[in-house]
Length: 165
Image (cartoon, rainbow, N blue to C red; front, top):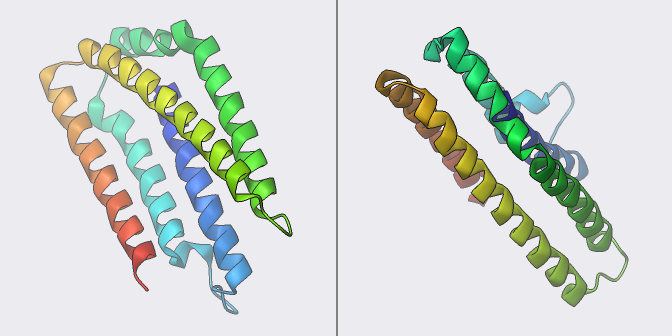
């Protein structure tokens, strides 16, 4: 479970980092204001809190924890490869976007490549989630589904806030 939580945290931190950068560049933070008051800050705090409480709520046995910890190890090389690609693609995309005269075609090509990498990561994450679900009992699956639904609702709310003029 820790690898999945780590992936979720990495993605959340990346999104929050983009939001913080935008806020800093746009002057959204005035004197005495905190990043925690921005929509991305509230989202990040909520996501971390949800992940921290999930472990206690699931009440996994030692055997379940052991089995779940082993699952990402079988995919470690794939996970590492995808994360490395995403970091490189994000860095390349960022560098291209801030050039004095950005090349739209190159940005689009890099974005398409990054989208494929994200899709591969989502497929891998889905496969790991399926394996993890086989270790949990019905009650634990319901708890996990409720927490995931809550996290998705929070993300949807945050994106809606960002989309407002």
